Each structure stands twice: as C-alpha cells, then as structure tokens.
Length: 132
Image 1 (cartoon, helix red, strand yellow):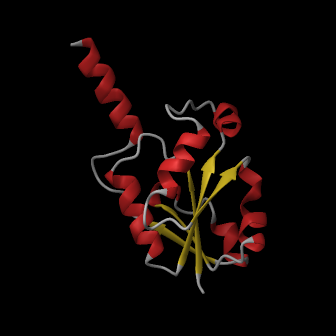
Image 2 (spheres, helix red, strand yellow):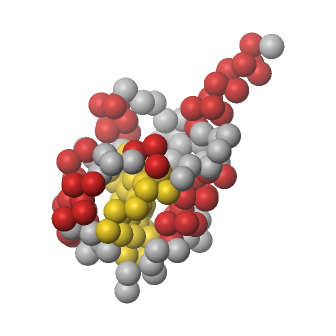
C-alpha cells in the first residue's frame, strides 16, 4: 500500500482544498492529512475560524482522506513520514523547494494551486462584503 501525506490548516474548506486532496490521493492508496493544531496556529500567528476538532471532523468526512493527524510544529515532518511509512509527501507549489529535505525519506511532490481561491481570499472577500 502506498501512503501519501500532506499538511495544512484546512480552515474554511474550499475547492482548492478538495483539488489538492483529490490529486494527492492519486499518488497512492492511503492519504494522511496533518492539520495544524490550534496551538501551532497560534505560534504561526494564524487564527483558524474552526477549531482543530471541527477541522478534523470536516476532513474525515472527505472521501479522499483516510486519516487525519495533528501537526504540532514545523519539525515533526520527518518523524511523521517515518512513523507512518509514507511513500509520497505532497504540498501546494507555493511551498516549492521548502520541503526538499524530505527527499531523503520519501518522494516529494509540489502540486499547482487552484487559481482564484484561497482561505485568505475568502476572508478578505467576506470582510469587504460586510463593510458594504
């Protein structure tokens, strides 16, 4: 069985998220999604609309996702890859080159992002619509 892993906050789920999950799953049989814990988001200076448990429940309901695990820090990726016997690490191409150090442990793939959609854009658009 080929295992894939990807990472993210996955807040305000949108078609870009679904696209990357679907395309990641095409690289193997079992997709693990590591989502930033609320504590890790705080360290990164990010605030998710949904709590970790809510984001986890949403992701677990998506047919492409086989397992959801917490991401507590930047450094845990090598440990996750080894512990879960991951064959392929997948991220959006906005992270191109940032995770090449994982090539010592598994295949690393950067997928193109879905054009025109992001959680940041949704939040900005919502702010604009509330001000008008």
